[in-house]
Length: 334
Image 1: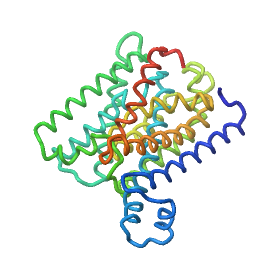
Image 2 (image 1 turned 135 degrees about the vertical axis):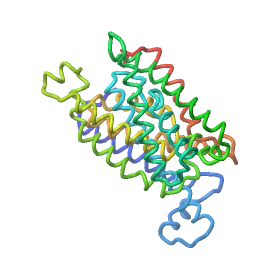
Image 3 (image 1 turned 30 degrees about the vertical axis):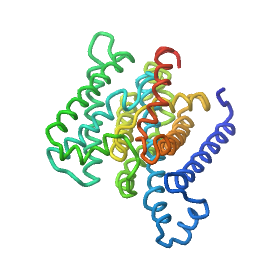
Image 4 (image 1 turned 90 degrees about the vertical axis):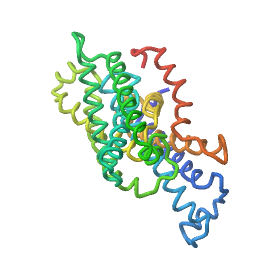
């Protein structure tokens, strides 16, 4: 049931934020090495260099923050893409952005021997931008112009193309495979906090612009003809929204590699809770995206303990049935 009043929407966002904070706390405590809540608190209040304190501050806290930030980026980019394309299946991985960003990172490592986090971020942004442009150009060919079905097919084609390029590069460079394998797995494990801080400014810029343009996206969602009749510069809104998607999806891939289905699942859940007003939909989706990815990361630690499943596998387990459900409903059944 969609919440109608603003105080109800605010209450829903507060509850979602509390759940996210609780999950971050659980992510710090739960894992192969058992850590008590008291020890976790002491590691921040009175760090003593013990093994437990090092695990908390150097491994688990960065991991939880990265999962929350990446989940927010993927979910918000999914909202924007679904609004722009009027396609309920639109998401960074479905339209080829993740594949393009991943290919660019692999290319930067194999051919140009890049190794800095900043270089990975810019390579990821470039790949996401090229994939986005390619999908929209291919999807616009024909008399009907850009349609949800053509856009989905174009995204699948671009994703397959970049995936093939990536596999080709890695097959001729085994050293590069070892260096980028942790990117391609789609995981937040073993990530350091500095990898998040290196791309966090781009994430923050994307979040801010998305929220500033939320009201304009409400108008755009009414249809392009109506939006133009109301004086909206639809071309500008689409370009800015595309830049935001590239910033958010590119940042997410740069930090955690290609993680799928968050951008599909969360926007639909958020709409069911809070409606289609982007001023509320975007921030709630960001919070719920963090909730989903942090929860999936916690679950990934227990499936085959003491080893871990990449969090991308856990989101796929959740997302594939949801994807099939949305596809069976049809593109007009939001």
